[in-house]
Each structure stands twice: as C-alpha cells, then as structure tokens.
Length: 207
Image (cartoon, rainbow, N blue to C red; front, side, top):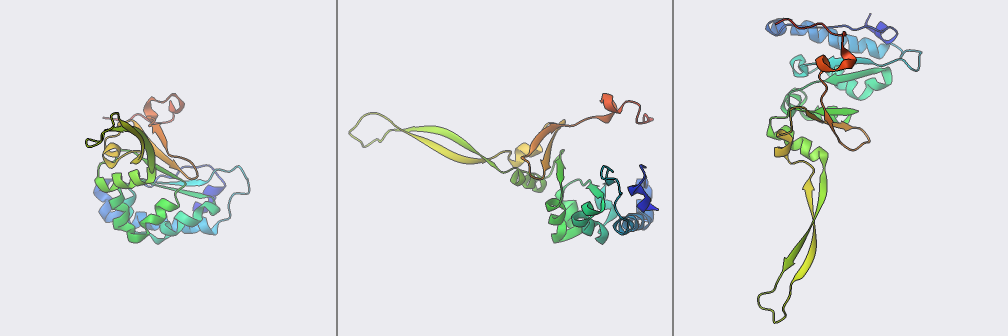
C-alpha cells in the first residue's frame, strides 16, 4: 500500500522508457493519482521527526493534467507529502494547467531554477528576483548661464537584480533558489557523481 510509505522508509521508482510513454502513460497517471489519493486518506506518521513522503516527478509535463496533483500542491503538506515537479520551462506548466499554473508557483516552498533558455521563463525569473537600487552621480553645466561651474546631482534608479538576458546566460554550474520567506539565493549545483557525500550510493552508468 502506498500509504505505508508514511511509516516505513522506502523508495519506489515508476519509470517508463520514452518509447513507451505514449502507450503506457495512462498506467503511470493512474498510479500517481491513486497514490496521492491514498496518501490523503492515510494519517501522517505518529513520529514527529518522520520525513515527509517525497514525489520526485521528473518530466512532469509528460503526465498531463492531473487534478489530484493540482490539489496536492496546496494541501498535501499537511498530510506529510511533498511534491517536487520538474519542468523544462514555464510554457509546459501553462500548457498543462492553464491559469492554474500559478498555483504551483505560489504554493512552492522552494523554487529551483537553472538552465533557462526561453524568454518567457527568463522574464518570470527576473520578475521574481525583483529590483535593486543603483545610485550614480551626474554633473551638468547650463550653456546659457552666466555663472561658471558645474551642478551635481545624485540619481537613484531601479534595476532588475538580473535581467532576462542575464538569467538566460547564467553559468551552467549556477542555479537560483527561491525559498519561501527568504531572499533569493545564488547557489552552485552539486554533481552527485563527484560529491563525496554520495560515494557508493549510486550505480555507475554503462556507456
């Protein structure tokens, strides 16, 4: 039972090869939707320190629209469940969930951004980052004035922390983290295969 994952530590992999995704996508959608429904019906672990059940949903858009996932984004935290959808760009989310796409962004405890290539996604990230104030001094001389000398003024101008173009041109090793209640974080991506913490925890890929 999927509900048992709240009480016992386990990892469940649901994997479909790309060439079978079209034929078996209903099977995958059914399992994800049914497991979320069962999670909502199962009481959270009685142990206060028990970790939440994490759904890592790679290629999230391939699942199509699933009402249980849409509801889970705002409700499942109280049931001991976390969702981690992975999308390529904001277009995928909007194409699948329409105007409700904003629900995923507003209910996300953490938004992780890297490898942005399209303008709309870059514009969204730039807007989320907000602006900074740039201060500079100007000097001016009135050409028709009888008085000599210069006049100086201090200018305060708003500028995006990162413009859309700067977002698209971030270094491949750089990512942005938007954590609820905190200022944005510029972080460096970890490569699991070269990080000492994960040595021996993964199988080498055959080439």
